[in-house]
Image (cartoon, rainbow, N blue to C red; front, side, top):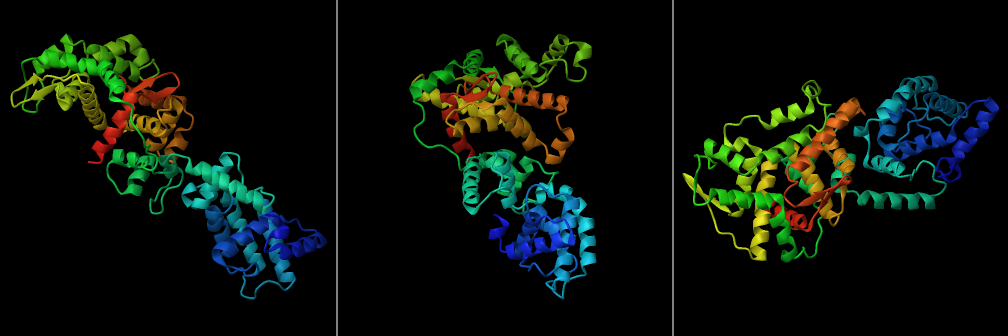
Length: 461
């Protein structure tokens, strides 16, 4: 909006004439912004400046409601000093105002602090968050030539904002009462916003307005994807190995000697090795270079375990096979069950087994978050690819506060560590047939589509 269209335009034009005569430097556009903030949010007249009002304007009102970019401190102070002197010398200043010299001292104290205070997003109003978002996509509101352009840009910004996934809107614009500052990460913010104590539930709630509708892929197509996936084949092999019966402990898992035999007979070391290789893709982790990558991986793969439930490669298969009915577990033994091969039964088994596998992953909320984000993002976008970079950025914002991210910055080691964590987390379900991986990212399969729809119903209770 130009000065000519401003409610304070006449006053500021008189100020310009006075400033030329007095050889004073003033930025009338900046003053117009300041006066508009006071008028709109504090209902204060341009002529009334009580003690403390300058500091309030510069350190509270501007950071909350003003432009994203803080003004130059020297230019701001000079402009306000000229304005106060203009009001007093022309008889326009309210008699209830503070002395112009004291008001200028307030400006000199506050102006240098404005950039730091204004950069604290915890103080921003929703409108200012949108302004910053618009600026980031090339739609700046600070340089609009007229009201029509302003409305056009606001419409475009709002449309782009509404197109963001809800978890991203939550991250950028915390809900009032979230008490979200630099020390709070996306996980804590979402849990507070939705009033839940389960981070997985909070993450799912961020997608609730984006869930697709329509027909799911047919069972004839989806069934083979579940059945032919390495996870599906390995469960059938486990069920065949269990056969007529294998002894279990009181907690319903294979006895240790039998568990070690199953691990060897079923060749589960291959899955363990793949998992470790994702966790240690190179020698950048501390200690790996000294031992050598191959030796390190061999050592990690060979780490002993005493209970079947402590062996991820076996535990996930056991839970999956039990969850889908390929085996039944009694008080002292487990046995294999017949598995109907009609399409509906195959799909039902595939879904139930993957739900069980997901539950294993969800035992570690930090491990499950990147997986759930990737699956849900692809699901709500119609099985589109979700890039590794997007998953990584989500994970960093979900796991770390803004202050932590600022402290880590672009530290290559932390970036590498986070990328490895994301890759290894996704790897927990990479053999299920729910998605395909590429160098670009993760994309749901048709089986994944069916699984996510069923899993959401399962999570709802």
